[in-house]
Each structure stands twice: as C-alpha cells, then as structure tokens.
Length: 395
Image 1 (cartoon, rainbow, N blue to C red):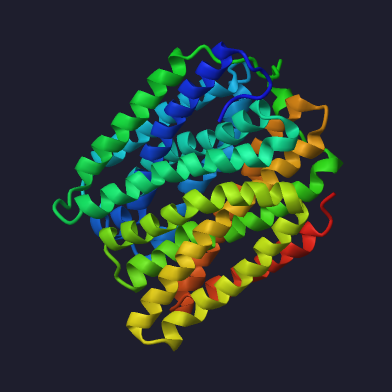
Image 2: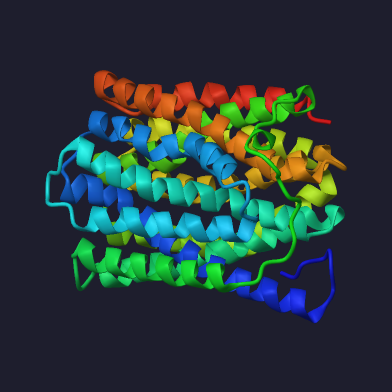
C-alpha cells in the first residue's frame, strides 16, 4: 500500500518501510494471541472464572491507550507504533519468565503491559491508513492493510501448528515473539516518518462530539461482541472441547488463508455498499453464529460439535473484519477535521474496551454459574442485534 497524499519516491519508500515494520509487529502479535489462551489454560491452570477476570488487565489497556496516546501527543503515529511494540516486548518478556501457576497479580502485570502495547498498535495502524489514503480509497487501503496483518497471523498460525507437533515449550514461542517486537520497534524508531496532523496539547486528544455519537454507541455494543470471539470462543474450543494449540493453530491457519482474499473484498464492499449496510449485515450474520456457539456443544455429538464450532470460529474471524466499516465511517464524518481522526479512533477503542472488560468479567461469572456457554453467547447476541439496529442511524 502506498501513501496517496503524495506520490514522491521518498514517501513511497518510507511507507514501504513502515509497512514492513508493522508486518513484523503483527507477526509477533499474531503468535502472542494464538498462544495466550492455551498458555493460561495449560501452563497456568486457570479456570473459566479466573480467565474471565483476567480480561480486566487484558482489556483495560484499551482504555489506557487513549491516555497514553494523549500523553505522547508530541509523537506522530509512526513513533507511537514504535512505543507500542516496545511495550509489547517488555510484557512478553516478563510473561515468559513467570513460573507455573503464577498468581493472578503477577499475570495481570505482565498482561497489562503487553496488552497496552498491542492496543496502541491497533489504533495507530488504522490511523496511519486513514491519514495516508485518499478519502474515497480508505476502505480499499484498509482492506489491504488488514490482509497484510492476516498474512502475518497466517505465518504465526503455521508456525504454532508445526512447532507444537515437535516442541511444547512456551518459552521458545515467547523468545520469537519478543524478537519480532524488538526488530519492529527499532525500524519504526529509525524511519523518518511522513507528516501527520499535529496535536498540540493533551486535551486535543479527547473528543466527545454529538456528531460522533452513533459511532461511539456502535463501538460500545461491539465491545461485547468482541468478547464472544477473542475470549469465549477460544475458551469454548480450548477448555470445553479440549483442543490443543496445534489444532487452534490449524483453525486460525484456515481462517487466515480465507482472510487474505476476503479482507480486500470487504474493503471493496464497504466502498460499494457503504458502512451502514455492511454494519447491519455484520450484526445479522453474527446473531446466527451466536446461536450456533450457544447450542452446538449440547445438541450435536462431540465430534460434530467441534467441527461446527471450528467453522463458526473461522466465520467469526472473517466477520470481525467487517469492523473496518466503523473505522472508515468515523474518518469520513470527521470531514475536514483531519486532526480528529486519530483521537476519535482511540476514543472508540477506549469505549469498546470498557464494554469489553465489563462483559469479560460478567460473561466469566455467567459461564461459571450457569455451567455452560449458552447464556454467555445468547446475552452477547442481544448486543449484536442492538448494534445492527443502531447502525440504521449511520449517515
């Protein structure tokens, strides 16, 4: 992907270097995310309730990232990305050195550090694309950027799948993750980044305007939706259905291969049909998946249930990318206020994660006391439907 605000060869070379660094950062993040649930279940022996509570330190950085971004207002988006992967490397290092059955406090400190870095990275990647692409091509470029991230995750899934058939050490995995994060940080610090709209003070990074209310509302509801995929979907596969890391890696490998083709297509569909229709479709499709997640384990034979949940997981990963419509929507309604784009993206992330943290804890309690996934996924499904209804108010 090339920057479209300028066609000079220098800017093109800079953006190629930025994308190469982001690819390495996302490769490290992909391996980290793939191993996270298995690490908690196998190495640390957490139960469903403890896993749910650990979502607080994992998702709290989604809120803290807004404060960190505001504090570092003097850094442009590329330098902010460098800080983010450095934090992720530090958190991964301390997690690697934890002994088995570490306390929740020790785990929380490691998780919150690594997760803060990954959440800052999440916002900067989208912001870089929104600032460097022409307005009419933002969804196309974002789709291409997501495909690049998927390629990184794909490599990570292939690594986990193959490596865990011969070696079951989490330490080896974390060494590789840290190496990728550090290499990406060095590159991002060394790159002479292009100009971005400057934020002159801490206060300019906190924007709550009425015109952005629908975007913030949809982000709130999708914070609940996110937990169904990144926490409870994983937990259903790993803990309830006993799937080992190599099997989860294989599923993500399939999702990644499909995503390489679907993500650019999603970007084109947003441009063709608009953010409103895409977001409504996302909610309709997810409501069906919630029903499958809820009832397949209890209705179907064990082998069939694993297959159905694995298919749901792949479809869920694909549908997750429809969230690009929310990013392009907020960039579009910011209009001439280009300096609002990055703060609005981070504010949306913060709001999304407040909801996500809340439902992570509540969902873990529901799962523990109800004895199964039905209530967790059905409750989350109501939030998905509400997001579709709210999307009807998008301009």
